[in-house]
Image 1: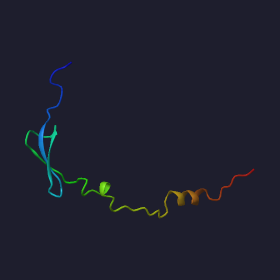
Image 2: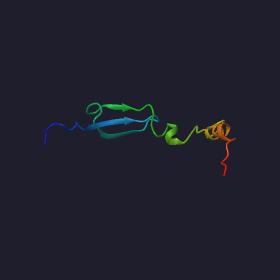
Image 3: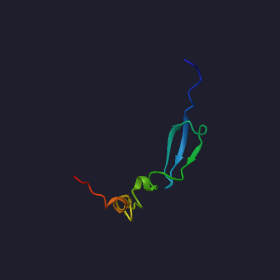
Length: 75
């Protein structure tokens, strides 16, 4: 096996958007650096489920029916 091909893991501090902090091992930065997050699971809509819009104003089904609604299957 080749030597010295693995990344250097070290301890860093992660600060989330709400101010909470935790220590973790990472290859980012160097030993003791602080990673300040701009988006995290406590604030991003992908995790919190906020701001979802499920309105179908002229969506795919309506467009399909508009284009192909007049076609019928003949026997």
